[in-house]
Length: 120
Image (cartoon, rainbow, N blue to C red):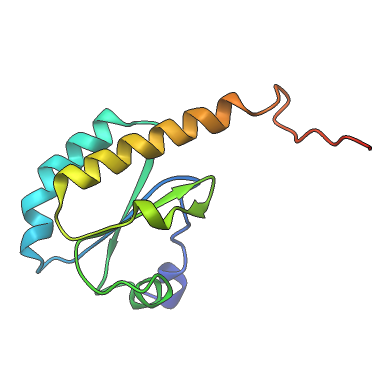
């Protein structure tokens, strides 16, 4: 992988960065559940990141164990939703919370998707 390819991963606007490794047993164990979540929440983008190929992102996001799930709401990291480890129930709960946040944000957008500016 070239350095240029390493930097092509973008933060999902509404979604999850899933940090994993080919040698990570817990990562492999929960993968079927994660794939089901991806099907259940098609409105969320999931970016799977191999920690051995993306040390830069691991350092940037302070990843210390695998799997780690980082949740983004409107491109902003929701630290309270982050999950380190293979806690499938917590991961499911936070997928649902993020999906609800996305729906709430979209309801609150003006129809033209532009912020309203009020002179006061």
